[in-house]
Length: 401
Image (cartoon, rainbow, N blue to C red; front, side, top):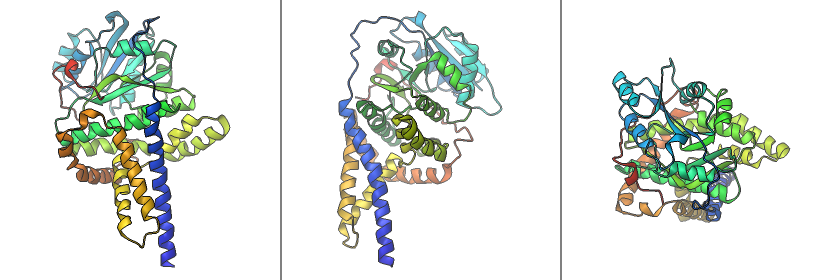
């Protein structure tokens, strides 16, 4: 009886790991089918962009972000930098007011990014074609808007740009940067390569202005990016991805910030979990909406760092004869490693990455703690991530190639 029960548990573990690893493997190889954009083609129209930057208690970094955001090759008359200043100090507001930007000071009893965006969208004129959502630590590359405009010549609804690390000053920052690139390869580049909608990150994306203004009115939770993504896919809007338009993002520098950020990320995965999963099946069967179904399937996937940890531990069963599927577990681990390696850019193949790998066990432990503490938390309460890294010059930042 015990032997039979052990076999059932092993089979369940095998099936769940197989689903996770085959999913990331298929889309990891799908990235090879991704077609790059030809940015030398003639541009027919110049879209107007509102660059929206919600800044919550980010006095230490928002001034640099605003200054760098103005440094674009795109004609200045076709874009505006809009800083939504939530609970910033008077000194910071005075400095921002001297810049060639639109400044919208706000203060809420309970702050969320959605509230800041909705306030700005309600106050700004409807003269823009697209709005670009940035986090307060994000820096656009010099040709970002020029590239995005070239890509958006046919009234496309939404486009996710390539968000990549702007710092590698600590081991956790290196690991965070690698994790982002693996996700870019699987959930964005690989998906587009296979004709499936890209995943939305939450910043560094561009969306039609009027649609964004209308749909954001119904979004209030701290996981606004997940709500927006679900609504876009439910409406059958294809989320596109541009791998050669870069937004540089600050990566977490310490273990405390790492766990705090992961609490939000993990909790957001549980956002409306049961409903989205059920709706995904309905959308596929009734409306042939595979993009929504694919997003629903992502709700049951393990976080990447936990997947490599669990598959690695399962691979050790190859040394024990009493496991029935030991060789299959080992094979799955190989597939998992291969899928991840394919997404790591060449710039990370260095000594610093080897040193950072020593922090992987700690990162796994923190991820488990974050998983235990986070269920449902971020969908109810805004979790602020402290930012402190300031790049000297956006033109000197290294692209995630």
